Image (tube, rainbow, N blue to C red; front, side):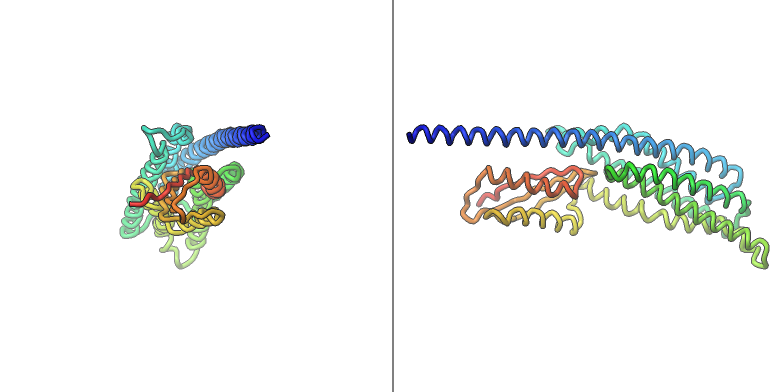
Length: 332
């Protein structure tokens, strides 16, 4: 009788283990399907952004040549730079979803950080050069342009940017990666700058009919400098942030505190304490290593696996691609 009970218990345990394995396999399938969906959405967003950049680049290039406006030239160069960067990134996107290997322990995520650094470094260099050119124009008496044509053109550009932003934001709500967020930021910036430039040139038109008409030649270079100062902030932030990712520095205190809070909440159920938290962010991937100690120096691997899965599921609500490892702290 006792042997029969033991056999039944073993069968139940075996059935339970099989159910757990099946559940994990099902979760893994869902995760892979979700990644495929994310990749598809990201490709759509990048392609739409590429089409929009080409259209506005051509229009602004023609208008900059016709009007000789520094303000439109800045917009055009930003679109050219964005276009040059979006093309290669379409090739890079599928690589970001490939699993990590021994050869590439961080996958291709660091390539994304490097890509962002290069992109914004180019934008920063061009912006500084255009600021210097506009400053020289002010010193040498300003720069006369047809304010009416530029104002109407910028309003048209603003309307076009709003249309593209609404479309991209619709897809962005389904999945918002670091790269997609950067693209949405650029389109939002285009809307604000186009509207501001249009307003500035309408003011210039009004000034030409007053005793302050001598100010009119300075409007274009001043607008160009103001735009540059406004646009230069984001490249600097992104360069600093992604350089930190490249050299594998820990993320900012807010992110560390959020991860620690999730880990401690999950560990309240067991007799383990966090001794050390090691977090690395590269591109869209986040690696979390939690070093733990036990009160009785006993480690249950089954509990550790459950604990890791719980922490990972909680962190996936906030982080795109997150990897969690729980490592027992061994005594010296």
